[in-house]
Image 1 (cartoon, rainbow, N blue to C red):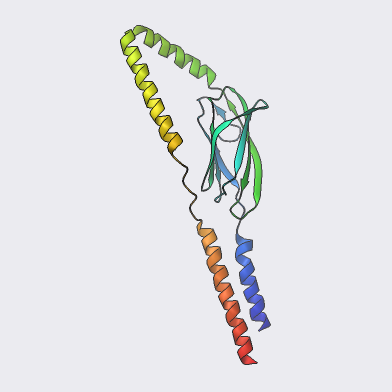
Image 2 (image 1 turned 180 degrees about the vertical axis):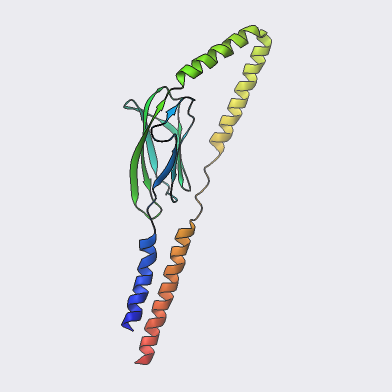
Length: 194
């Protein structure tokens, strides 16, 4: 009977030991990347779900850069910079709480060099706008502002989805429940034999 109790105790402890910590699997931008286009968000992908309260910080050449939003979506941590990012060397520091309760910290670096491409693009846009009739340019600008305003309104009104329940946590609870039932059954059998 002692062997049964030891076995049941091991079964109860096994699911908790088998559950792994989350690790950073990928990021956008990637570690060491040189980005030549404007960057609208930073996404960190982890190996398992992470908890609300996880956060990230961004700095350029040692100066902090604010996020307008940092959202947890299942196994992703997504940060949206408050303003357009300027060229420079960026570092993302993150602190996440793994689904199993363990804190994970890390950082990654990337280089942003989008200024030259933007300057060429802006000059081409200005030349094209100068050639158009003023009324057409004004109508296009107004339409663009309305589209941006409605896009921003939609983005700000949308709430991030609540993280879905991970199958690993459910499996752990099921196994723990079965182990408890077996343990209770073993105790009842031991008492009947006496």
